[in-house]
Image (tube, rainbow, N blue to C red; front, top):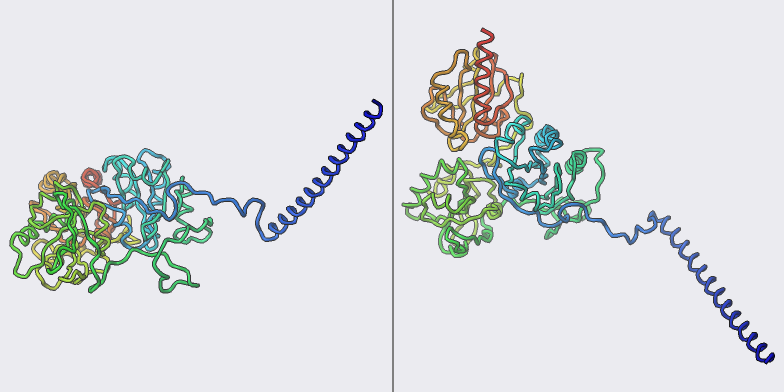
Amino acid sequence: MEVGLVIGGIALFALVAAQAFLLVNVVRQNGRLLLRLERLEESLAAAGLAEGEAAAPAEEGPGLPVGSQAPGFQLSGLYGETLTLDALRAPGKPVMLVFGDPNCAPCNALLPEIGHWQRAHGAELTIGLMTRGAPDENRAKVTEHGLINVLLQGDREVAEAYHEQGTPCAVIVRPDGTVGSPLAAGPDAIKALLARTVGIPGAAPAQPPPPAPVAAPQNGSENGAVALASTPAGPKIGDPAPPLRLPDLTGRTINLSGYRGTKTLVLFWNPGCGFCQKMVDDLRAWDAQPPERAPKLLVVSAGSVEDNRAMGLSSPVLVDDSFTVASDFGANGTPMAVLVDEEGNIASEAVAGAPAVMALARGEQAPPQPENPQPTTPELAARVGDPAPDVRLPNISGKTVNLAEFKGSQTLVLFWNPGCGFCEQMLDDLRAWDANPPQGAPQLLVISTAPVESLRSPVLLDPDFKMAWAFGANGTPMAVIVDEEGQIASEVAAGAEAVLALARAQDQKERARV
């Protein structure tokens, strides 16, 4: 028995010794691995990579993925106009969409800066303010600071499409229509996003977004880098017309290629556009009895089926709510048109405005087209205390009238468009005030895109709306007071109530002075 115990003890001792040997070797091996890991970490540190950075995945920012397609939209402006993402992108610049709310205090505090940014950085960036609520709920706030490109959501449908989670916030849309930044939340982040986008020195650096896909490097790119594609100016004469497949008012899909063999006038339209409404009678007459060898008419329109049916055209009307087809053809407003020849190639430049469109339809020489048919707000509009811009415009009789002739009395300069629904709503009040002005009331000078009936005061014609922009007006009805010395004496008032209130305030001031 004793011999058995001795043998068992020896076996146990041998087993323990073997385990100890294995343990020592494992520890030594792990030690060598740790030393190797330490040396590897030292090498990474020397190369500027901290521990864990080499394999850490890039974090996605808030909002839609950078480089994804930006959601399109079609929204109303403050004066009944229609604004789309493609129209904002049309100048070929980045677009910054700022999401706000009329009941958001930080949003309201940011409005003066947004107005300043639009004027100071308009050459590099288009800024659109996305808000919600009724037009009159927003109009006084934004016009006080000279904002343009104000878009009204029904609720938050566009904000939700961009994954907005609170206001104010902003996002960049590249010229090619893709998302160019994560959402910037809060005033400070929005200011930093603006600074980075327009290249303000000292702006906080940001990780560059992945480049947008483009077909080939652009001319002038440095070091072989691929420049971001910009919105094309539209096809040139002789180029194949872009694809055009849209539903008509009955829901049937119409293809431009089906018009091969005949010239086609492609007309871009919006029933809510005052300039379109002014020419609808001429268009309807031409459509009912087209001249010999006239091109076929194909209307590409925004708006509802009912509004487009109300035009009473016999030619097809195709619905393009997103305005994307118009942008493909180089059209960035309405009314605009382009001629497509029998082979399906572009046969004219895109022309803008009723006279140019009708001239193209009749086969006549179209009037010279400006480089940018849509007016843009001048960087420095006249301000209170500045001399009023020089106004020299024809009245309804064709006689040129000069604003300088009104010196010696206060003048209410009213900017007007007979096709504007808000103008139409205040016309009766304006006529009543004009027919029997109160004692001490300022003179009235109306600058309108078209004649206005039943007014005693002078009406000057400015169909291109150029003079309004010089005064800082970006819509209708809007007005400003010019004093006896010919200087701007008030901020621009926007909307019927504000315009009439401005007129009555001057009445009261004059009576108090007398």
